[in-house]
Image (tube, rainbow, N blue to C red; front, side, top):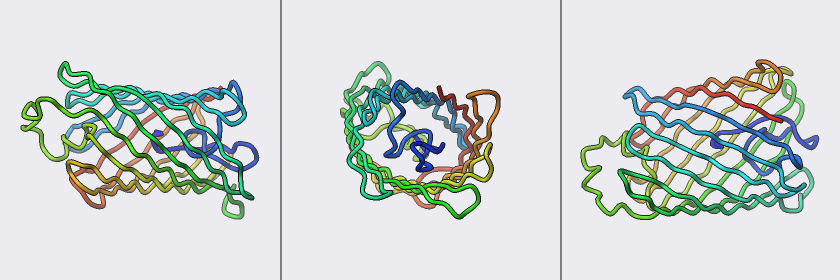
Length: 234
């Protein structure tokens, strides 16, 4: 996720490599494999991808797995709107599924994004605001998950969730980026939560990059978590 986030200058704007309102270059591809794990041992492993269909349309997908009994898959189409000055906007719609303990439930999401690049600090950077409304089918046997702790339960997809991620990214050097992301979420089941995710992305070999980060809960049931991932861009 885009899961965060998010970074490589595109279209002379300093936009991020993944997510946000910047369209993927036509026929361009981005892939990210990451693992997020908290202090209690709960984890989420995700494969995220984007493919540029046209100059404004990007096809995206995310496959996810948690250690608390959930597998998910979602595909979406993002459409870039007419820019206003240096401000970029995009809308997206997606469909997918969630599998839990033999149950397969439908899932849909809608998104609206804003972003812009800036100069004057280090090698430049970007600001982005990503919002998502996600709706999933209800659990037919909620008692099957009654034994989960609050932090474990937060790794399951709720029936309705609204998210807003505010990202500030900086290109520290030509080969390294710093990303700070404030993650806000309102879930139907556990209420409001907020987290601060701080990551470093560094070039490896060729099109590959490595991502290392920490996620600190500010409110809600989540635990301190750490993230490691790899990026590929073609």
